Image 1 (cartoon, one colour):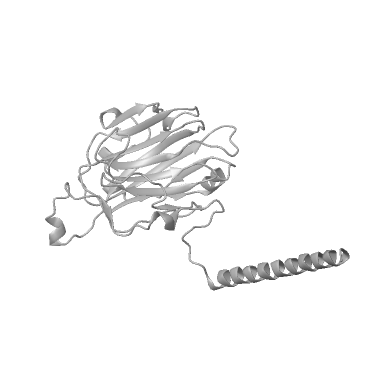
Image 2: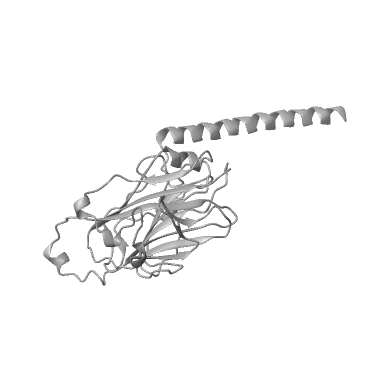
Length: 280
């Protein structure tokens, strides 16, 4: 069992609407099961031996800034220690913010568990928080190396509560944790406050215990079709089934449209008939 968990406070919703910054936070787990070799925490002393920093990444005593509030920046951090835990939970606290923003923000932030570090298209699962106010989303991608990235595959709206849940995710061991962010024409500060990995105590069947977990393919048992999860501009889901009331309203609107067209057609026909009579 592997889980990325995040609880988003109200500031996230405000940012999506263009009124404020984005904050990502979590509740603390069991400190006894904290794996420091895979964790990143304040004041970040001695992290250089366990984490690689790439691009525009800047380490301070309060945060690790992946990108500054400037255009065309890319930054990432990658754990140098492969994770051989079969069952774990990753808690991430991050902040996306900028000065003078109203409706336009940076491109978002991604959390990775991948086979290849510092790679432009990682193989493995990813957790992505998009920060465009007109298409805000939380997305999860489980990739076995043959799937192209498409944020619509497992996307859901962020509403200040639990934003995304995937069940029965199977991931290989020996992969690396990382976080990345980028800005294009739009920009924001993308800050990682902490990344904490906790080992989970889970019972496995004898068959599972005998598996070589380094060789299994990343997979998830339930994955909806992209068309079932892509949000439309009005904030609704395209794949949402029509309820009885919606069907009734659609039929009523169609009937009213037919009646209006019939009345307009009758009036136009009558006026033409009267006009033709004047010429005879």
